[in-house]
Length: 31
Image 1: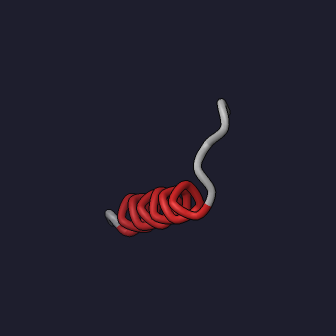
Image 2: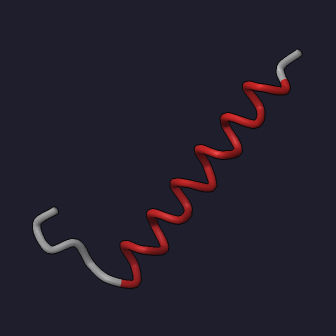
């Protein structure tokens, strides 16, 4: 059952999206 893998991928995508949103909100200052 590839359900676990699918869920993992979805979570990863969501995390990336969140990181991108945060980066667009406040640009990184050397972090």
